[in-house]
Amino acid sequence: MDLTFDFDAAISRRNTDSYKWDGNEQLFGRADLLPFWVADMDFATPQPILDAIRNRVDHPVLGYGFRSDTYFSVIQSWLSDRHDWAVPREWLMFCPPGSIVGIQGIVEVLSKAGDSIIAPTPTYGPLMDIVAQNGRHLIRNPLREVDGRFELNVGDLERRLRPDTRLLMLCSPNNPVGRVFTEDELQSLADIADEHDLVVVSDEVHSDLVMPGHRHVPFGVIGGNRSVTVISPNKTFNTAGIPQATLVIPDEKIRRRLQSFLDRMQLNHDSTFGALGMIAAYRECRPWLEKLIAYIHSNHRLVEDYFKHNDCGVRKAPAEATYLAWLDFRRTGLEQDEIMDRLVNVGGVGLYSGIDFGEEGRGFFRMNLACPKALLSKGLERISKALE
Ligand SMILES: Cc1ncc(COP(=O)(O)O)c(C=O)c1O
Image 1 (cartoon, protein in one colour):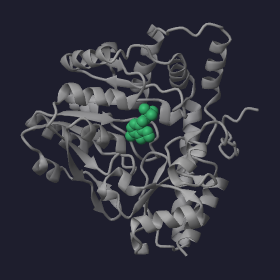
Image 2 (cartoon, rainbow, N blue to C red; image 1 turned 60 degrees about the horizontal axis):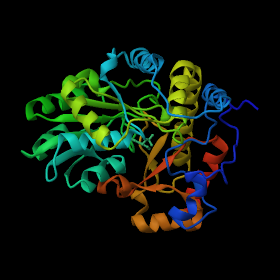
Image 3 (cartoon, rainbow, N blue to C red; image 1 turned 90 degrees about the vertical axis):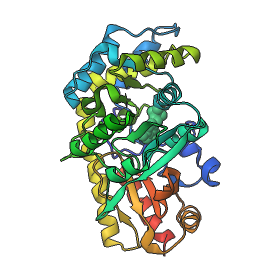
């Protein structure tokens, strides 16, 4: 059965060792929840990727892989065609087993214990964990809420910098709030980076999931030698189980330092399937991606309309990118723990608590809406029920 473009198809993922479906009990204490938490999709991974893996398995030897010219040229073409970014091959560094380990390497080689790293928050939790767990000090720079939309607060960022601040950790587009930062916003960050001698690490793993009417600008286009831009096909093409990530690093010294980290950690060989999946995704899955974005966009609308017509105290931030909805529960008047308890034990739904993305997320929950509309609607009804 070809499920490639049928985003309404209900595919059971239970008993496939799926973190999202089989990990509910571990995370929420209940196995029967409908999961809207971790960021992968309940849609079939596109057929060209599955075919590439199947073809490879037809050859019976699964030894170490090698990155061919094709490997690099498909990344270059993707960045050029999709993001209008011409990137020389030598700027591309890969990092098994994935984006977060690459960013961890950058933190390690460009700062030392006791230094500080600034991050606009809320942001993807592991980006903050990397800072704290490696003995660096995290400076939070809360996004500013303007009419329900979240903007970079560049003045505040500059005020909070310390003499020992080495890096600016950006999540662009932002997970969890779904903002696509404008060129002007990014330029302001680049100016600050220049003035204060910072390197900007820009996690752009959601950058291919941009909603109609918005345009993602890779930070590397603006930040040049002060940038490390991290991309990956995993969110876009639902290949998180075969991790793959690329760091785009214009500055040769930074590349050399990262390479020394990778050598020290013996991180030299990544997954054959991850590489094959990426090549098939970037080469053959554009039509699928356009249809996916249209479906995700309509799911965002569905959630917005639902809460407009069923006033249970929840509002949704406007989504410019990602398949993640940032839901504002502040009008319910309930504490974070109580909302979580009700969602899990009354509604039977699993959402990430906003404070997993920093203290600024208090009063919010993140809902993953990359699933068939029928499941999404069921989840929304359960959220309402939990708040009755
Ligand atoms: C912003 C961001 N960066 C990195 C990751 C990790 O991606 P991967 O597991 O593909 O390395 C995620 C996963 O949700 C993410 O949202």
